[in-house]
Length: 166
Image 1 (cartoon, helix red, strand yellow):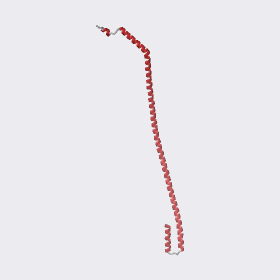
Image 2 (cartoon, rainbow, N blue to C red):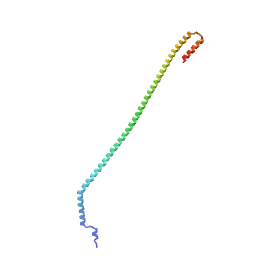
Image 3 (cartoon, rainbow, N blue to C red):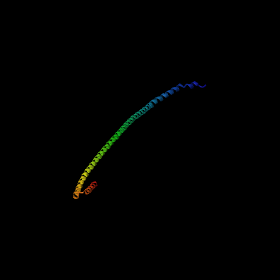
């Protein structure tokens, strides 16, 4: 009959040899592989941590730059509105000044034209008076030279009136 108990339970020597070889492998592993692997993992953790910190710093810088650019955009918009407002005010002032100058010039020209018309009226009246006086003197002279009958006087007066009217 086969030895079932021997097959179920391993040999004590085999167990001891296996435990010793596992211990030796463990010591070799610990001495030659454990420290380098631990160093590698520490370096890798430091690298990852540094990368994460660098990414966070870049993120903060990006946010700061974004806020700064938004603030600059707001300031530029405010400046733009102020410039447009100032330009509108300046244009309105210029327009009003031009209108005032034009009105002043218009009034001066109207006043000058009125004065010229008045002067010409006075001059025309003076010339007309002078002509009337001259014509009256001529008529009086003609009347004195001629006979004093009423038809001749009437004709002379009518001629005089026609000369004055024309």
